[in-house]
Length: 293
Image (tube, rainbow, N blue to C red; front, side, top):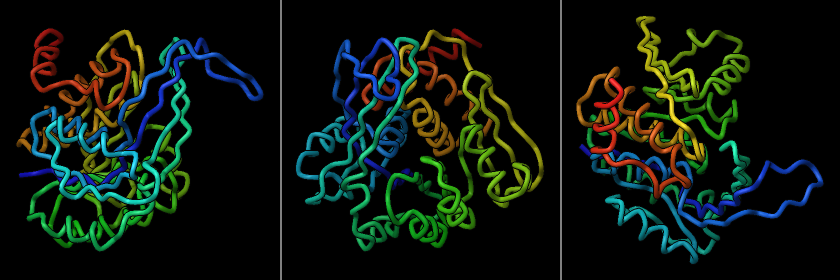
């Protein structure tokens, strides 16, 4: 069954720096690299390389045709990627020598998509298909509601985090995915503990502390460790995790195995410079786990 991913497509401009810039500081970059990125595109490539059929729903501008080609080359179905007059979304990403980053984002075409085209793409899905959503596009709430009406499994990455946007989507998602900071922010915004957020399941990534999946109905948890590696660039690690987690579920694996595969994939990804173009293949994840477990 395919994974439908309604998400952003960006042009990522990487600037490698001795340290992250301070206010008013001018820095010379050691190196510059341009790649395709965006939370949506990153997750689509990650899931496709993990072995799932992925249909991307998104948009590029006149300067973004090569991004569509990059998705195609990764095995992603791009029939529902719109070509618009708005500029392709892009991000300027500053990466320091400790692999930390700062990101400045222009949404561009990601915020100019036509809802009717998005709706038609989602309505082509069948019951049980997975719908991935993030917060870098418009129409996220309507997409979630349409996915629920199609009886899809709606996985929502609540990033970039905005409390009101998350609250609007919660009634229509099956799995809410956040990092620990976002989970704490949402808990504060809703005035309830994380355990009491009204959604069937929550997935929280905790960086070096691993990840936890929680069944909000039964109150049970499944934990996964973070694998120790020497990171080079942490950009896109969360997208890699979610894409691989969704792919594992799509392929019939249980939550525990899905978490392990996602943790392994993101551990591999952070040892490489870049985002979508360095997402690991399924065989690399299998080999990594064989060595570590």
